[in-house]
Amino acid sequence: MKYEFVKEHQAEFTVKLLCDVLGISRSGYYDWLTHTPSKRDLSNQVIDAKIQEVYDANKKRYGAPRITKALKFAGISCSHTRVARRLKHLNLAAVAGKKYRVTTDSNHNNPIFDNVLKRDFIARGINEKWVGDITYIPTKEGWLYLAVVIDIYSRGVIGWAMSKRMNKQLVCDALTMALFKRKFPKGVIMHTDRGSQYCSNKYRSIIKNNKMIGSMSRVGNCWDNAIAESFFHSLKVELIKQERYISRQQARQSIFQYIEGYYNAKRIHSSIDYMPPNVFEYAC
Image (cartoon, rainbow, N blue to C red; front, side):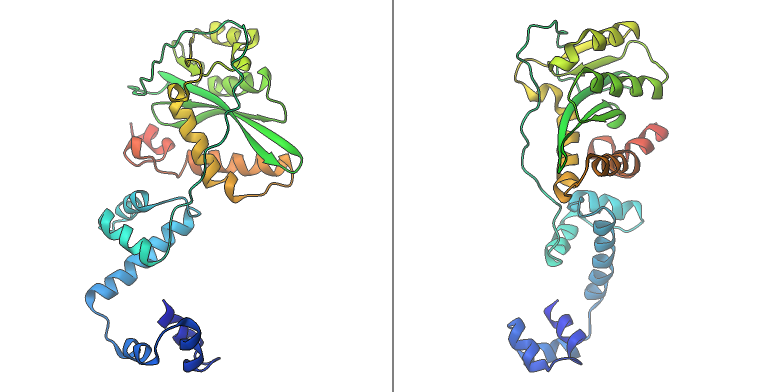
């Protein structure tokens, strides 16, 4: 990469100056300049270009496993090990993030549902098991709260709502959207944590009136709702951490585009044969 930089800028600066600044020898540069690339070198150049293309198209969100699958879908045969090596050579890495604090308020005496789901995250088809949760997004105007409903079968976000208030209306709107989108299926297990919003009479009425089966996590056990936690982790790492929202409206537009334009439609998931949720549902 340093040799390439020297070659690109030698018309502007002397080779000696460029080599001194970059900490490389002139003899090494001239050896590289006259070197005839091998078949492996040429192959790596092609692979590197494709890797960079996938990496950029997904805004630094893909690491070696997903890039390997994306290349395979594009008809390019390349092992995970080789992709990992080339990523290191290109100094590319998937964005990573830290854990975020829990927003759930479980300190209440409201009625709760039993834990019907019991961490059984395997579904035989759509509309068998859904999960829901709430998270927060910082903006300069204050917090924006996001509630989602996810179908475990496809990992698709089928219902969502955003508001500056974390209240019962937020979660009811997300669930209502999911019901409309899926044409009001019956017998769906709807699992959430024990947050007070999910224990409201309004939310419980939606569950009852649509013949759904309410389910709630045990106290203080985030793994009982791991599917929703996983989505929020992806959202925070792949989008929120990369942005600085001036307004709630700007955040709304960005999150809408991430959910509907990227996560559901394009982002491949290891748990569903490396397909996007929309494609997986259509294929199955």
